[in-house]
Structure formats: structure tokens, C-alpha cells
Image (cartoon, rainbow, N blue to C red; front, side):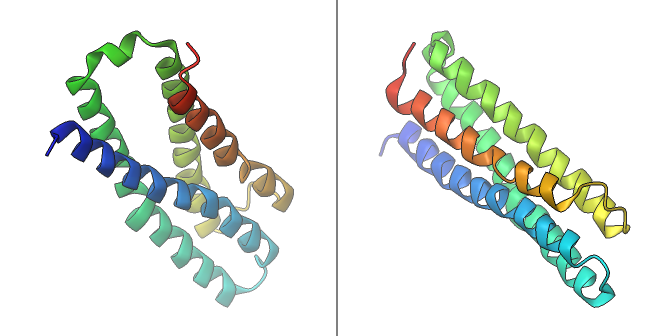
Length: 143
């Protein structure tokens, strides 16, 4: 069994898990903003958001990072490729998105709704754009 391929398989599984959370977290925020006047509903959304971030998204992001670094250690020649630089740029965009979601979750749990429903809907589109660009870079390796 090739160790690099094992790391790559774990990396792909972690990426899929992380993206699943990224696709869903701002959708939860949309519903949370829509129902912010109900204390009971607020508590339900707070639990859902916190668990999604802490149990799924945070560990998945950590695993994406560790396995990504592992693959680069085993295949450092990829660091010379332009497509990887673009992919890494968008990885860091999604990391920023992730930490912004953590910030929003904390604000919402304190009853501070600093984003509108429309802003949450717009933010919800970012992971899709990152996914499209990342997959195109990895598959096509345009430069």
C-alpha cells in the first residue's frame, strides 16, 4: 500500500466533510436570523451551529491541513506548480470563511445578529466558488 495514497484518501474524505459543513453553516445562519425572535428556536439553532462547527468542521479542517502538509512533505515538487498556489490561496480563503463562521456563531449565540438574512445567503455561496476553482486547479493543472 502506497503511504502517499493513504494520506490523499484521508485528505479527500476530510475535504468532503469540511465542505459539507461549509455548505451548511451559513444556511443555518439564514434560518437563525429568520427565527431570531423565538427563544426556543434560537436555542435549537445555537446547538446545531455549535455542534456543526465543533464536531464536524473544526476536526475536518485540522485533518485537511495535516494531510495536506503530509502530501507536500512526501511530494515537495508540487510546491513549484502554479496551480497549487491558486489552490492554496483558495484554501486560505475557505479557512477565513471557517473562522468568520465561528465568529458569527458566537455573536448569534449572544443574540447579536450582526448579519442580515441576505448577507448570510450571499456568504453561503462562497464555498461553492472555492470548490469549483479548487477542483479545476487540481484536475486540470493549468499552470
